[in-house]
Length: 550
Picture (spheres, rainbow, N blue to C red):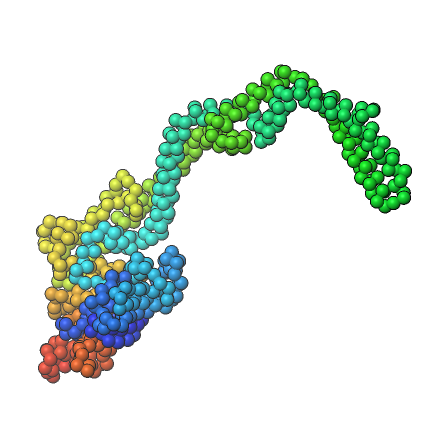
């Protein structure tokens, strides 16, 4: 419910601060006093686009702030979806800056207009005669019938199933498209994979094979060089090892005479040990070296295969070829497994489709059961509002496709006159009749669901007497379960309120300003008397006002 409203620097309002209570709140005032300004300010809070021309003083910012008690509205999930801090007392603020830009805040968190409008739909419903076209909207008509049918749980379950169903449908389509694409490439991918698998790739293949190839290809030269090296080291007369051994023996005799000679001796000895090791390795290399033309041919062939594969796949090493091989394995595996995946998804879809069909039938049945109660209540209320011949027919038809809220197509048909033909609401009912139908529907809805605060803007236009008295009673009844505001020119309706505010203009320092004042009991008598008899108060008008209030 709306608990407070603050408007600063908007249209003819300089600074307005007002608090509201639950129940039925009446707003009255002469034509042109500024009731539309009040509605305009509230519309900005609900997300309407801002217009700098509505700012009173364009040199300073305009601020409109409304506080709502949302504790009973079950809006925590909505706040979470919009990434907002939930507060039982939620403050919505709109600012229009001198630059013409506007800003919006919910509990001091900046928001865009979409978020503001989304939340606003759950906080306040401003209803004017022009908005009765909502009656002809399919979504609204389903909202009405589903409220009476108590379909919230069924619709939630259906919506969740439908979301899963659509997601699986998308997965299936994507998988089928992939299968078609992969199937075209399967033969080629299999050929490439077999070619790579036949090569028996290992990460160090190339380097090892190239080394082996160089050795086998140059074996005679290697043999000659190893033999010459062996002779240089081992010859008894001129061999390096023999000479180094002699050098070691010479220094061994004098190594004890000086630390310097001892250091040279140790270095000679170390060199001799290293050279002996080199000699042993050369000897081993000579023993292991073997001319093998067949192996050379095998190595050369494998190197040629590797180089051809790298050139074919435009890579520079065997590691990349291995990655391509694994990639192809996965593609081939995926293609071969796609049929299994497709069958599994189709099976799931069939199960969910059966569940959706059953839920849609259950929803259809509950809607059908609710229709007689809806038409009976509507016709009874409209009869009391001066439409005794009004008849409603609600047509509900199951269709062969899943819609957002079931499988039903819904039509509200109306006949205003006895014996008249049923037709669509927008064709069969006048503006005044649509207003009364909307009031009747809202009053019925208030019994079945938690509606946001509603503000009726002169919904009573064109009615008078006993009908206006009945309209006031309907609003009064609605206000027992929700907060109701009504802007009215009719004393019969004004007298039904729990609180009464008057919109009026006054000149302050030669500037006209719009004010909103809560009337006392005595002031209410005067206001209603004036609504009855005009500006000149008569005793009879005052007495009549008291009677209405009592």
